[in-house]
Length: 218
Image (cartoon, rainbow, N blue to C red):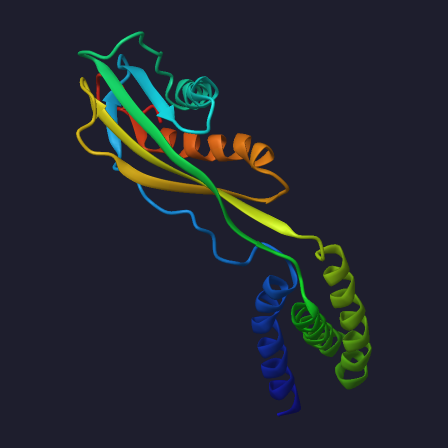
């Protein structure tokens, strides 16, 4: 009977551990990333043409970033102009904006410390019952305070909003709104390379190439 109770207690501790780690560490908050591109399937002989524009960006930099991902991920080559046998990719960056910023205040510090206490109690309880739980609570409190100190600087979350469309043989009739984000950066310029990378990855992920026999290359 005593063994059964101990197993149930251990099971309850283990179930709470992921939640505690999520609360203790940064990156568990919501992101503004949104939007989805409809998958496009093309054959291996298809080339792609990029039409990139937008305010506040270097269109050529973004163009080369997208080109690099498409060439690497799909094996397609870039065309000089749209036309038959070409996948046309239209990108219009509408804005790059701060999507939120925060610095840990007293309430957040208290919450992080309390989470550290809970985590320490759970781990200590697993290791040594009641005495282990008490020791773990003290270690957890110190850990929580340390995390608060490391995370006390202001964090900025930057986002890019763009209209994107893909179509075979012609310019796309419809563009979808795509939002990607970059966190933990201090300025718009610092965030821009990450934002461009993430947008390029989203575009490349929507494209699938296949061989003439129907087999998939990507």
